[in-house]
Image (cartoon, rainbow, N blue to C red; front, side):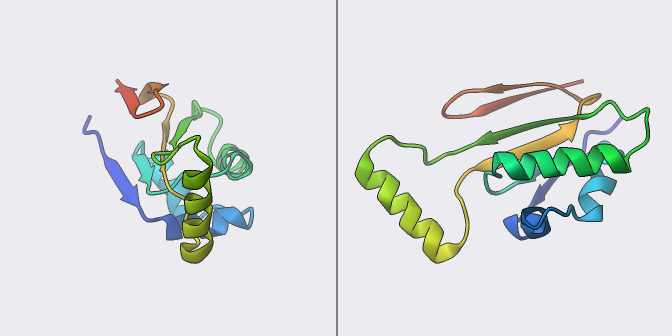
Length: 120
């Protein structure tokens, strides 16, 4: 089996912010593709994504693995303010989100600086 990884711009998840999931994301997961989104998605958006996917995919679908990484995570007040300002101006959060079907993505190990994806 050929492993496919699809990199999506944050614009693809705009509908997710409204509680809806783009049907192409669901199709990609059904086709056992791993998706990388170029921003961190909020926990509420993750919940909406999981709910939508599980209601639109057959019973034999094993589920999804999802992990987010905030590449600009910093505890200093000045850096937090700078990050919030950039987010307010650009409308985009920093980070990365990886989503994949659980039968392909066996585990995602999260480290503060990187993610390790274990696939089978």
